[in-house]
Length: 302
Image 1: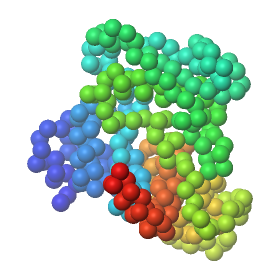
Image 2: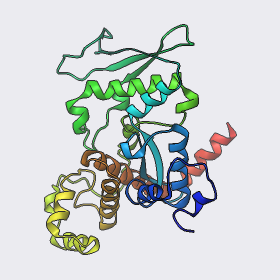
Image 3: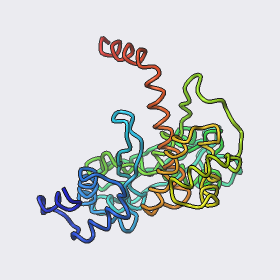
Image 4: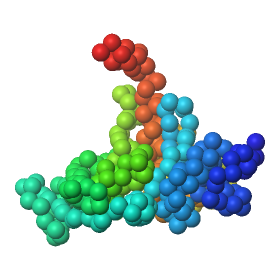
């Protein structure tokens, strides 16, 4: 079936055939017909514009099917727009931040990270503001070595406030925002060290020390210069020269696909890290299948 055939069976779409083709080539790169259909339906349901980056497609490794699958995420601006269109959105209170002392402040001036942020959404048919609190440790996106990603390091107050706002908006408008999450909320679920026991030894080797053999393999595979491969690999600490070529390719494939979708470099790195982590999680599950089945049986018995 062609990329657009599925839509000709369903006339309910806000996009022309040319626009759908453009989405397929630039935003939902590598999506199957079903995944593309799901993305278009989410665009129609939310009335968000993928070309304005209000809603976008993210490829991640799914251990259940042992392959990359597409997920849908929205931006914080997209959430605000959805809330505004309901006609019941009456603004917000906050954001407020607190440190370990729990004292809420309306501006965060400390050089330390805030412990939490809270925001209230006002809704015309609610008697009271609807508050949501997001803890920094629950959402902060960290690299494998435990250090924060650049946006969380430089703007911790803004990033955690976005998470709190997303929580509050989804609580206030569940019918409109159910199942839709922002990258600020989802990233912390992806950056997890899932290295199985007896896996590759830890390595502090810098990406620039990949062997010539590996770099030449990668350059030939991707039809790129060795120098270009070095530049891209220097962006990540999630794969190292100690990884096998397959895992390095998983990272590079995810990064390049994310860049083609229009993601910024930092966003593409997060997406690629998430894909590698999901792949490692799947590999680890294969090594421990007996215990997984035992746990599943115990859960079912409970």
